[in-house]
Length: 226
Image (cartoon, rainbow, N blue to C red; front, side, top):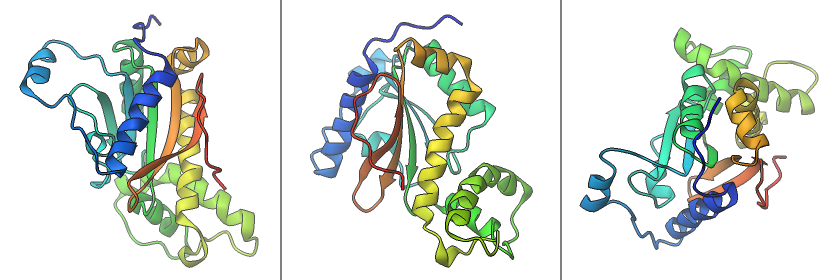
């Protein structure tokens, strides 16, 4: 598959992206690219250097927490950042048609989808709609992985005895893997050195996006998932 040529390196894209988060944390947001001139310039084209796939949570307003503006981020979001064909296609489009050099997968602490996946993995799960149950299914392996690491008596998870944020980080890494496994276009772009993928968990109270996993030509200090 032919690809648009990236305008920046993955490392440069990450540097600009995370610098915006640092400004937000320090209450020094510059609110770039949000004026009439920018709006007019983008009317006929777009060239975002970063594609973001994140949870739909209302507290993850990406342009705010990364101090970006119009045309800076190509965004796809859903409940629990669960990979689906539409998500893969959106990320592929950003890379192959728009020349994005970086995909950021954005999880967060206190995630309702993760909490619900833990509940669904319990002995007496709460009744949910079939759509919600199906969407939560890809998160449940992360629940089981962490639960069975420390508990062997029962396969049913207990929300009071499991670290939901740790489950979220395991699921975050699995989401990055799922994007790579499900898309030759994305994997090939990483292999060519044109694309990087970073998985971050956002800390709601602090406002910081902490990177936990990275693939591609990136030099990033990662926090341990465990």
